Length: 291
Image (cartoon, rainbow, N blue to C red; front, side, top):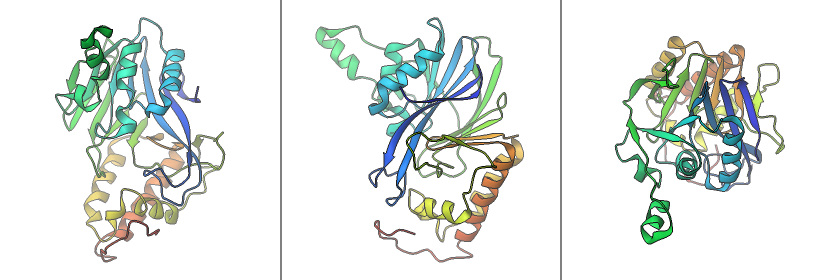
């Protein structure tokens, strides 16, 4: 079973599963070496919970065991894939629904069951090998407040990610002052498979050059010479709107503490400013070029 990082006891957990960086993982630069984690986040409220993302299929057994250690048998679970068209978000939804009391899947698409490959087990059932599974889809808008728990006592804000290549949601949880940023701020990894898998201002040495290189060598290569001024305004709006103590990305170390949050956002803004079309020209980038 992979590590479980307790962010706030009985309220928020990062379910982490380690994998090696050896040039084959497209969410990291080809020259990145070391280890990182995929992060699924369990937001708990009493006997109920919401799971953000569902991890890779290779981590299915570990993820099921992690959830099992945190939820009581009678608990209800909602699943929210933040990138419904990406493997790390959707791979284990069906397995989780088969094992736990999953009451809904949040999605911007009415046919979420198809998007999460929810059908393999159902197809088998039609051949007499078991009972068909169903999955309730709860549609969410581009910006919407959702509620954790049967008593709807804990609100979380879901909204369209201000910077994205594919359809992506960010989530803000006021109860733990945590911003879940999916594939943004995922630039922190470790030379060791043992982590640590969170980082604070006191031990973090990341600089703007590292963030720039990370963005340009992953799915955000198109930022160079683009209109980043509009992106900067949208991201600044998130900082102004929410009191953020933790940045919880879909991959890599969780960024802890207000000091580090402010520093990371400042560096991110500095990088975007330097990539704007007013500062640098757009150009063709070979897929093997490292920047």
